[in-house]
Image 1 (cartoon, rainbow, N blue to C red):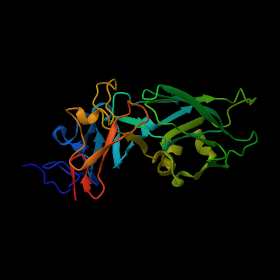
Image 2 (image 1 turned 135 degrees about the horizontal axis):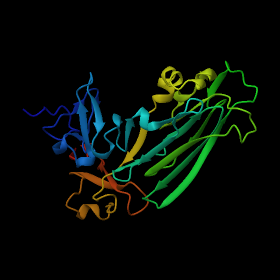
Image 3 (image 1 turned 120 degrees about the vertical axis):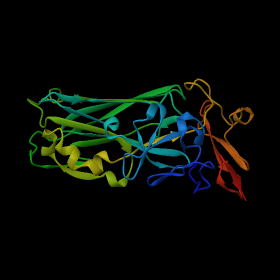
Image 4 (image 1 turned 60 degrees about the horizontal axis):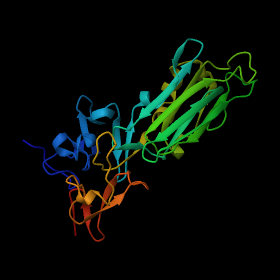
Length: 293
């Protein structure tokens, strides 16, 4: 028996929710309930309540919210890097590639680096705009820093930098104590995280936690590891992002996604950016299923 359609935002005959999250079309639970395989949501019932995850190439991301233009996902391992130089515990890079998907990293995200003598380098690129850029920040503490002192984020022992929209991101953490004329590293561990910008992410922490590869992350899980990643999404008709349709071409394609009483809007200022749909003025509902007056 097919699940009942409890929401007009869901394709008829399809499950409308996974746990606490409503899944609006073009997303859907199951291949016959989404616009295509890239918008398919896997509802994992081994959790209580069940948790939704992206399918296909990004199945390691849990979905925590879906908006009209963006999707908020979470995977703390994929979003963070750590290097503890004294005990050789290192995973000092973050690598994200959204090329084979309808998603791009949003500029609503930021990069946070925590440590007392570290340089974090960020490399980004975008296939859509054929651009690449780099940046970074240095997290620093004074030479005579009290090992039981308090760090602040942003501030002492913590730096942040904004991120651009793009398909590709690569982060590297570097130990800079020798370049800054220090005999030894003040604290052994350094941490970095990619997540959305928000007022809730300002916090203080004990610098002594930077000597332990586990305590810091457990103690500050909410502020540091709890930030979702924001992805922009768009409708495309393509294979491996080599064929896109914008609002000039999309209405003439067989896979045009906008329903009755809706219109198309381009999602990028280039001809390759994909599109989304909106209800016409005076109408409401899900523009991909058809709007009503």
